[in-house]
Length: 222
Image 1: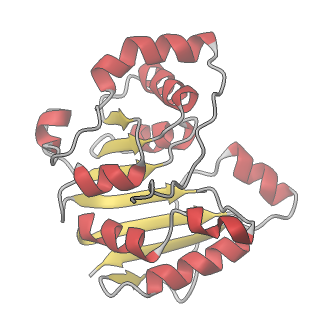
Image 2: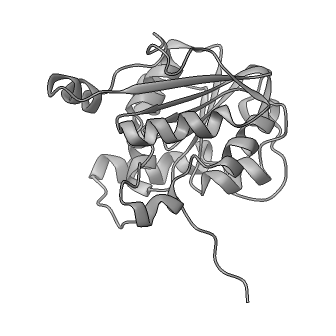
């Protein structure tokens, strides 16, 4: 008897704002990428040949849209399961007039495994994933050895895996996991300084004011 895969998220209904609902309905047919097994042709998807970055868990889209706006020479594939977040990102993309963002509303593990060709990505960003702090939920954490190995295989040589978290215990866990993958090399001695290319979110700024830490981990594919 087979068991369903353990997911790193729980789907919640969530509430669409009218603007998110409209953006989802209007833009998902054009900017959404349906999940289907088989490698994506990024050049055909974006209409050009450019470095491709995967954003895992783009949330409400604030960071993804800002990074994409600051780096028009790079293409971004955002992966997010929650429909209101997808709608929010699409609204931001439309408002900023961005042409370098596409969205997959599906499980990130399956997208990386089934749709992203090996050795194809300039970077993978995993910013503030759910830390699942209770011990009985640790099995739900996205950053596990199997996922880290899969992610490394999708990076091109020199491609970066950038993780950020505000949960120290999870940061220590991720550091140990990524350090155990032979194909990945840490760019720092332990945790990295926040790269200028990762914008500070409002959530992060509030946490810093309250004295909460944020830990960045930046590994490259050997």
